[in-house]
Length: 238
Image (cartoon, rainbow, N blue to C red):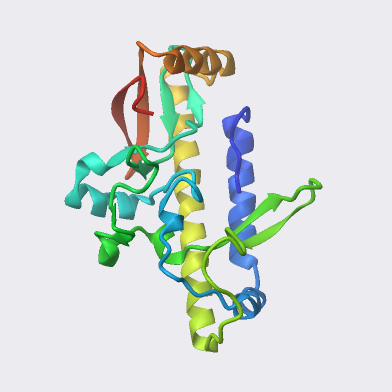
């Protein structure tokens, strides 16, 4: 996964491009073998729809567009804003789904998704993924599944065609996410250059600290469909 904290736009862009190349070239046959060996089956526990298992649900632009039609109030700027300019304005690469006070997805009701047929892409491919992460020892390698042995059942018999479809959908999601991130980097870079701005980590940290203390608001620009949408967030909303 591409981490952008304390990175320059240029280094983040280079890392995202490298990750995209790695995802695209990852052998489908190797991925399919892993999927088949795991034999994951969902048991409808709904744990993946809560913050207990997933920090947030990041949305591709195409998914955000669907949610905007269903309920625009269900969207919020994705957390962990990537950049902050010298005036304390934040920039983030997309939207996320809001959660209820108990940490469950805003669309979860009685352990069932109210928009199941129109659920976001990341929900469709979960628990599968394909990105590089560091393990406990610091070794970076590809990770293909989230929450291993923490929910669902394993070692079920999966047809080869099912495994292949999982691979296609998962790689398509990861590629779309990375392309959105790359476009975001380029848009921020162009915006900063045009307006004489730059990312300032000290301003980022100071503004976030004050925001978390309460009583203040921050300005967040969400990258969506090639443009930035402005949001004013008050303490307690992020």
